[in-house]
Image: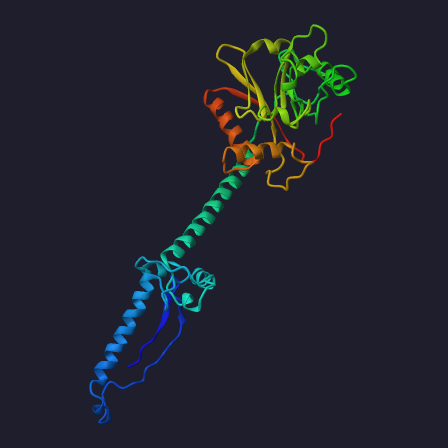
Length: 365
């Protein structure tokens, strides 16, 4: 009678994998004349074989090998190998090769837990690929979209009913009023090109250390000029810096445009990622003007004494303190998209002045 002690896996692509030992018992079942002298030899051998087979199955079910020790990765649940045919050859081989404990562990059938891990990994990969395809398709649609262009590049002339907006990453705006060359240059631009609205990114001023009357509008105002601004900064860490703090934005409105303001606000998290004005022209004709500054890193860089104050590190500390599964860039995109989507659903028009960080180490005057 021949008996085979090896495990065979049949995959869904038609391949059969056999792992383990093969033992052949060539003992004849029919006894000879000399065997008759051994009383009960045939029945004794049969009972021994049955006992050994039952012992192996019981050990596999209980997750124990000889000596009562628990084998690596063994499960106590009943094994149902009906899912083996759903795995490909490469998936089955990867599971078997990953077993780095005892040799007898490599001879076991694929467990349900191992099968679920392979399926979960496959589904995650498929989902990532699907999301990438959707994003690529969206990029193609945006590239093919014909958007009408308003205005022109002839900045020397401005129509009476036109509104002109200006956006700039100032990489730090000094907080003093005298001998402030950046403020003087901005004043010159505002008047020369008749700017109605301006968005500044990386203002880098810790507004918590100044009175409420001190704003970007007060820095750039000439005499009795009518202007107003809403300035954002990281209010969650006001004591970790002096008068300078990385990041921050400012949205400024001048002259007649500043008289149409209905609401104003800042980033709801307190990180100072954006600031905004809601203005109303004709009745129920609203426009949202948003100035936003996106972090340049994911925050997972090595923390050193010189980069603790960067915008990405500020946002990373916020993520860790709130137990979020995200990174600064992802959190910024999701939060800003949610914010803009809310206003778009109300029929509000949006003017967005957005700049992403450069990733360099800034120096300020």
